[in-house]
Each structure stands twice: as C-alpha cells, then as structure tokens.
Length: 210
Image 1: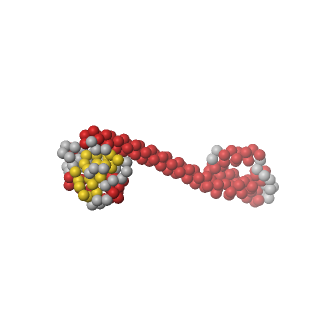
Image 2: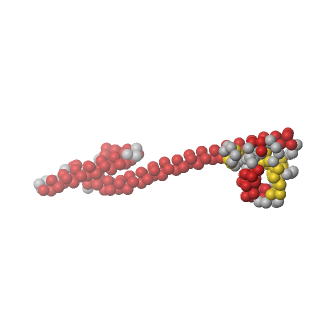
C-alpha cells in the first residue's frame, strides 16, 4: 500500500502540535469513510481502486492510533489545570498564614510594651507557669466567668487576676506544661465576648509574676 502524501502528513503533524487532535481525528475518519465508500462502489463495478482509496486505507490505521492520543492529551490538559489551580490556592493560603503570624507577633510586642509601661512587669521569652492575656480584661468587656471557662480547658489554675478597667488579665497554672499548652492554643485565637457579642483576638505572653 502507498503512504500518505507529504502534504497530508505535514498537516497531521501541525494539527498534533497545535493540540487540535480532535479535529485531526474527525477529519481522518471522515476521509476514511469516503475512501471505504468509494472502494465499495468500485468493487461492485469491477473497477481499479482510485488513488484516493490508496491514501485513505493507511489513514484508517492512523485514525485508530490517534483516538487514544486524543483522550490522553485531554486528560493531561485537565490534570495540568487542576494542578495549577491547587498550587495557586496553596500559595495563597501560605501567604495568609504568614501575614497572620506577623500580625500576631506585632500585637504581642505591643502588649509587652503596654504591660511594662502600666504595670512594670516584663514579659519573658522562656515558658513559665504565668501568662498575661491581652484583650481579655474587664476593661474590654471580658467577664471572669467566660475567661475561666476558656482557660480551664488547658489545665488547673492557681490564680486568675483581672485588674479593674484594664484590657488584660493574668493567669497562673499549676505547671509550666499547662501554661505552654494554653499559650500555643490561645495565642492569636479569635473569641466572641458573651456580654456584647464583639469578636476579639487574644494575644498571650509569658511573665514571671502571675
């Protein structure tokens, strides 16, 4: 059997490179159907096959091979789109987390300066039994009952001090491990004040005095 003309082969390659596989496959099958129909008509009339039939027969094999390729390229395109979308979302989530961490750190430093200025108490970087909780004081609407319920989830407390009209409170746990657990869980956490329905974010530091 003869091979496809050079012009037809170049056209097929161009279609594949341009990812127009579906168009190429459909075109080939249409051409094959025309060739088969011509062959049947010529067989009935006992005539020699035309040159178009000679070209169409090898194209039938090419069409059968191109159909799986078309499905493969469609699947690869969908996978690429899904992966790109997931990578974009992951990058956006990572940026949001980093921004939140920086914000919490800034608020912690501000709370340290406020505590030092008003109470003369210095925050420490190492873990202790005592914590100061900014935004969780009587001065900004936090009730003692609500704060007790929040803090007792992380261990037994020895003392809870809430200075009048101040936006912070002091808590001392029985062990340093309990204080660390409360620090790691509550620092930067958003809670809703029960008395007024306002949302606040807790910022926590370790202190030597509770």
